Image (cartoon, rainbow, N blue to C red; front, side, top):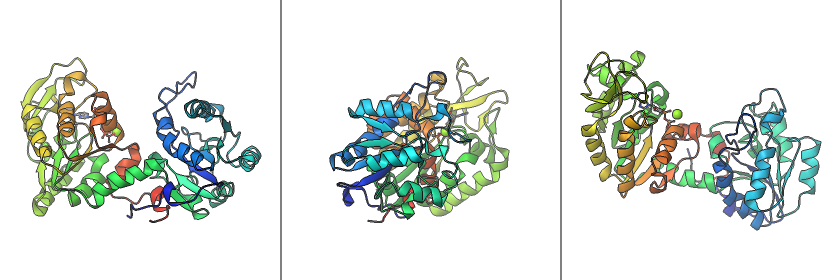
Length: 397
Ligand code: ADP
Ligand code: MG
């Protein structure tokens, strides 16, 4: 996959109408619809501001939630328009539809330096089907397409990929950064490349493990998935998270790592609990001999030491998946210690995955990382080495 894509800086937008796909899929209060976290709106500001400063007229669009049956008030982007207006300090015109009479009239009247927000793209059924008619209708309102919705690039929808068939298509600054740092680390990493993989299940990370095993020098396994590896190696894992269908796979991966000369590190010790609860008393056990009535909840101190040592001299570290149940303070130490080790290396450090990003932020290390990928599902598919339709559709540099 080619990550070297044209950006807003490579195209002239002065006096042009720019269709800008944003990721305004913000969390909202269920009753009042108030936006509970405007991080995604703030993240879009640099690209929007740049386009406006260049003299473009910006037609922004996004999906919000999962409306299934056309327009519904509770999925309206109106609260986003209000917040975006406050942040930009200028009026954001809100359209009542996506490609209907209101949107087309407002788009056609839009002047350079003005911004219009279309309604939720998923109010159009053709959006998720990547319907060419819808894509064409959206494209016909503008002369340039800019995508900055990294969180949606793994989807081939009309507004994330389809429109690029009808307009010159480039990335905004958010996608540019994702491609530069994460794409760079995958395509041409500064070595040694250390991949840290954790989270809950082996089965949800097969694609990531397969791909990183091909490119990494060291693979570190933690989190819930470690117990399926331990069991596969003949360990007893008590009541820990276990996926019995994936035992052979784990052994295959261990063999493949050996064959390729990739160091694959598994936990030596675990903090365990009698029950899955925040109040459970942590008890330390050796990773291969967890008692029948205990479950592994975090990596232990010996493991922490080994993992911290492994990232110390890395050139690049890619981390996906917490080392333990970090949501419970008694079992957050493994994740915290690994985050701290990343914060202290000179390596390029990249965090991918929704819960991993949340963990690093919650533990206070967010500003110590080189890059925290903003897309949950999209960053996982990126790590799997899959072609991302919302990236592939952009013009090559
Ligand atoms: P990401 O969203 O970053 O890809 P995942 O969704 O794979 O990460 O995993 C995150 C979840 O894994 C967290 O909610 C965490 O509590 C859970 N987890 C980590 N270690 C364990 C464990 N030992 N047992 C059960 N769940 C775990
Ligand atoms: Mg997750």
